[in-house]
Structure formats: structure tokens, C-alpha cells
Length: 230
Image (cartoon, rainbow, N blue to C red; front, side, top):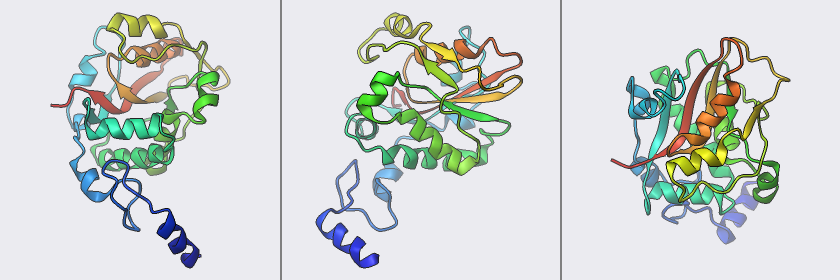
């Protein structure tokens, strides 16, 4: 099998999705240099951090964090585009594992009962072939052991892309777009919502609104990236 792998690598080498350099055998999708340079937020180590504050007065969130800062033209943008638009679905689980591995010792995941990825509308899911938030969630689950409810929430309508919309436009675009799958009992559960990018929080708040009727539910939020590199 190693010979076949070596032959495959010769003609179809695995390359870093950021810099394009050929990967070493132990590297997955990102070379170690690019991985080390990614702009971490370290928000999981900060109580009342800037992401948690974005939810104040809008929805009671237990914890909130993003792994990386996103900026136009930066390396994180390349990662997001590779994941969402260029078909590099394997990057999702890899990044989910990196994210969870760096956060797990800070007790961010303590007490969380299940992970719910932000769902795609079935039409968009058919076009893309996968839900990038679900892939991230599965990567987090592989490190933490927390189960993923892939259909915990349902997206009721196909909405326009959030890109280039104002804060009000984003809220209007997703308002009442999600519904709870009553097949699961989430009473008194601590749920972690996982998405790819945090900008205004409109999508995540819409998801939380769909869950708020559940008695005793607690909600935390985790995204791969958030806008505004510092």
C-alpha cells in the first residue's frame, strides 16, 4: 500500500492549501509553518471576551469563542474559501481538530452535552455536497468526544449569501430561518453551536432563537473565525 501511496504522491502531491508547498507525510492540508502563523484569537482564555459581548442584550450565551481572526486577503480567508467554495472538504475536520486541540485544556468544552452545527438549506447542501460547519463540528467531536447532532436544527428557507450585507440586512436575511428538530430532547442540555465565520452574529442568534423555547437549555458558540484581525 505504501508503494501505491508513494506513486500517487509522485503524480498528485498533497500541497498546503495556503502556501501551496508540498506537504510532509505527517502534515494534513496545512504545512506546519502556515499553521503556526495563523492569527489565533485566544478568546477561549478570556472571560467576557469581545465575541461574548457581541451577544449581550441579544441572547444569553454561556461561552463564545472563535479560533482565528479573519481579514480580507489573509491566510484565513484562503482557508475559508478552500473549505466553502473550492471543494476541500477534508480541511473542515482537520481545522476542527486543530481548533479543539488548542482549546480543550482551557475547559471551554466542559459540561457541553452536544454540538449542533449551523445547518445549510437542502438546496445549498446539494450544490456544495457538504456542510462546512458540520465538518468543523465533527473535527471538534473527534477530540472532545462530544456527540454531534447534525439535524438538531433545520433551515426552513434558502437565503441569500450574507457576504456584503449590512448588520440589519444579515439579521433580516436569517430571521426565523431555523426550526428545532423535536425528535431530540434538549431539555436542560448545554448545546454548542458551531459555525465557520462570526461577523455580526445574526445567523447564530437566529439559531439560538430557534432553541430558546427548550426548558433549561444553555447555549455556547464556537466558530472557526471571526472578522477583524488585530
